[in-house]
Image (tube, rainbow, N blue to C red):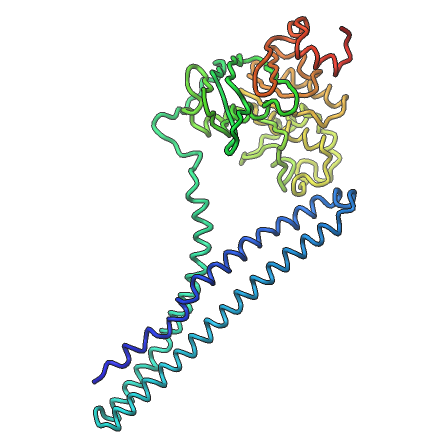
Length: 418
């Protein structure tokens, strides 16, 4: 008997495989353009700036352009999907017709009986269901493959917490932080942001880092926080290279207030005691008091249980900064890193907070970045950065006496005489 059913079965899968590549390309385009939904989020958050600059028309055209592109690729995907489905169904039915025709011809020629022809038809009919399921599976497999490609981009990234045998869990918190011949540049840049820095940050003292914008202050702090790795040189604590210290252990021992600190869509309490399962109420109240934000919290309907909107919507910039300071104080770490932590505060609030922080800073290693030199005058050590290089180090009084770069900064801000 001729082997008719076996030849017919795989034919129906041909269009499905044929369209796999273009359909995947269209799906990836849709994924890419769907990410442009962030455009809408940007417009929503930045609505005030859009209106201030009469940019409504420009932003609307940008949104309409994105929607037109999405519609175009969606239509291409729909056409391919329908062509694929119709083509598969057509070939499947054509297969049935050809097999029945050939079977009937064999019956007429006397090569097979009518019963055998009916058996062949029954077998072929029984294959239609599994073949349809296979086609559906292939289509779903394409979608899954695209999703897996996106996920693999994340999984292939090196885990920053991936540890090796040389990494140290115990942090020598009572030791100085020593920076040796440190240089750093960002990926894609040929110019160093920091150039051959050498510095000792004494333990249990306040070190202030000052300088003009773009001098490398925040970059240096992020190197100390282990967000970046130096291109040359190293950072040591008790003669241990910072790169050999366990990431989580290091971060457990410090609190940080960054310029771009983030406020979560959560309660006041959870934003201050972030990462804590059981909140200590006394520490919470103390942290709010040091940050001078207690009055604001008490005026809220649910006080510490009041939920804040995304990115602290409804809060002023100064209130956000005070909340971030409270977050660092609640953690009560051995080391503190403040990057322009009071830049948005008025003079009265800043003075009150700095007085309380001076008490909180006792016996802690503190690194402060500030443009307002009035906030760092009492620091034990002041480091002046300029174009990625350390040009002066000393106390406020000694640097003023030198009448160098720091003296000029102080003179311009505090209006002191020559």
